[in-house]
Image (cartoon, rainbow, N blue to C red; front, top):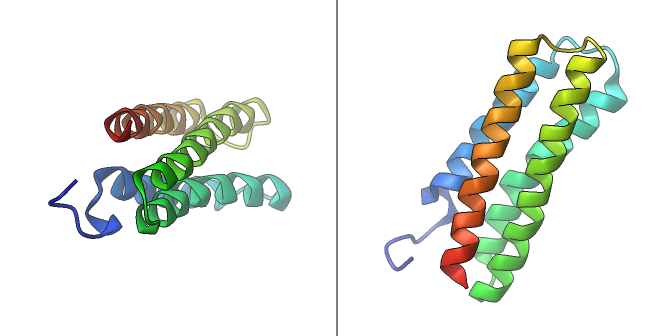
Length: 116
């Protein structure tokens, strides 16, 4: 990671940022604010834990925060299924969130393997 000087240069952070925007777009019309808030917070957690972990003083700390970010990917993915089940999102929207969160989770996992 010698060439990466700031978290904004990490592809996983950029992908997490895109996922947050997508979650906000898709949750915009949902009237259940508790559901919306939880899904948005989970997506934000991915992005912020990547950033916070990168800013820590060691690869061990970064790994720990990536593990939290990866878990939040699972939460977004789980909530995307529920959003469809509750008729809050279309099947296409739910599948897009599921797919993007699954891909991001895999990318985070690859970064974790690199750090080990």
